[in-house]
Length: 306
Image 1 (cartoon, rainbow, N blue to C red):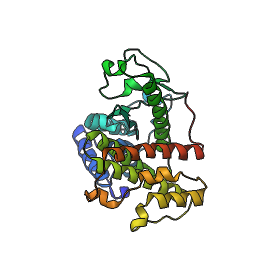
Image 2 (cartoon, rainbow, N blue to C red; image 1 turned 90 degrees about the horizontal axis):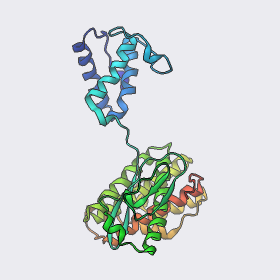
Image 3 (cartoon, helix red, strand yellow; image 1 turned 120 degrees about the vertical axis):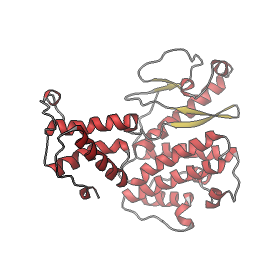
Image 4 (cartoon, rainbow, N blue to C red; image 1 turned 180 degrees about the vertical axis):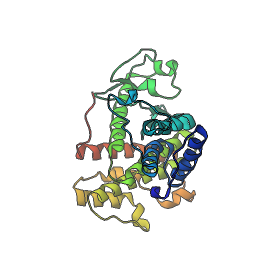
């Protein structure tokens, strides 16, 4: 689709350049590219259509002369145009980054930062202490969690929160690490939608359905990337337990039936024809996290955290 866009006359003014970029940006939007993906595609299409090229990397490119609307200037202007018009929308989404945790019957959302290297996940009641590097105090990452609430936690609760958070952290790293099939990207979106639904406090059916959708796409993606067929139509295409059995059989992962059963749900849940309790929705969420950790360990995708 991108080869359809053409622009034969090199811009000679800001107005000409903006006119060109407006048509190019509209074209990329129609091709389905989100803003954070458009700069690279736009530079490529400008280079091809106008027959210009310039090195925009390496130690010398920032000092390269910028003749107005010359090759280097023109392609740099493409990036500047997107920065000016889209700002933060150019920041690429970082995949799944949150999970839900139950503290005394109330669900709380934990938002994980991007951490490079070794991570130490722990729970400290002192919310005001400043931790740096790979130290991650889970209580500081809970939306709206107060010092008063932290002070009331018993030691047993602290240990449980720490254990569940380690599982959740590893599972999200595995989910974000899956690649080579479009199903995995869709699964990450389904996962975040499931957490959003859980935290809404009333969309229990949607939460459970989205958890199942995430698991379905992960399992189908694993089969597809290994060259195996998977059911795509009818009830079998949504049966998490059956898909899990197929993955276990074809890939030798031996997935836990209990986790698959807790995640699985009938399509009628989506239409409100079958009610879902908060406990069932959260159970599906927890089972999904456990399933991802198990898959990650079997595929050697996880690095244990301290």
